[in-house]
Image 1 (cartoon, helix red, strand yellow):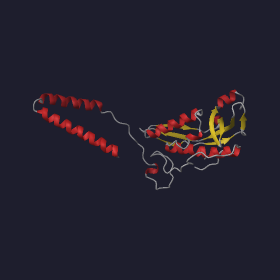
Image 2 (cartoon, one colour):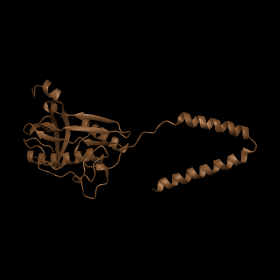
Image 3 (cartoon, one colour):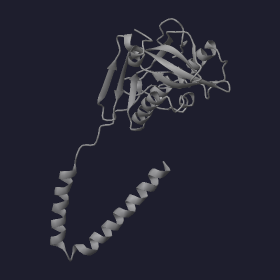
Image 4 (cartoon, rainbow, N blue to C red):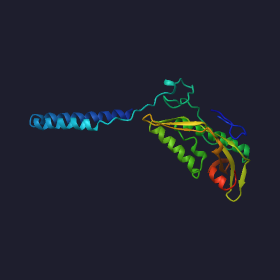
Length: 246
């Protein structure tokens, strides 16, 4: 998983259940007592109710979604053994990124260090659905990626997962400063190969990227109190319209 970001080279880089059970058992016992008290006086009604219940059960017996999530590799990995996600289940024992953002100098080298940390936290979130490590790097204005990561988080919470889907990022320009916006910016290329989003019912959405031509965009940054933050980005289309890239 480790990778150097922004180099000029390509990078690949049950208590509640017991309580619920007790409640259901109590309800079931109450229902049995009530049924016994009325059975001798209303046998015909009971028979009718039984028929109605059978018909209702037959009508409402729609199949539940098939939960296919298990262990990648077909078994639980030993502690410390990293396994990539596959058709059996999500990645296991994914190395944790840094717990908190670090302070780095207001230089291109400092930005590279922050981006290395961010990408590791982002890829960890994609493999686990745990976004607590990546969110602090991004301001609320970094909307598109925040939405994407929230969608991934929701997918895991529903019982799905992601196969592959990891990204690295490569600088395609020097570090520039926008004095008016008080922000830095760098033209950046996103590098990824494919992603498979597995839904809880086993259905899949697949995405592939065999041509990186349209993956260049602009990332804008804010620097405050020794910390770098991702602020926003400008799409490839808008960069072309502005004449920044051809």
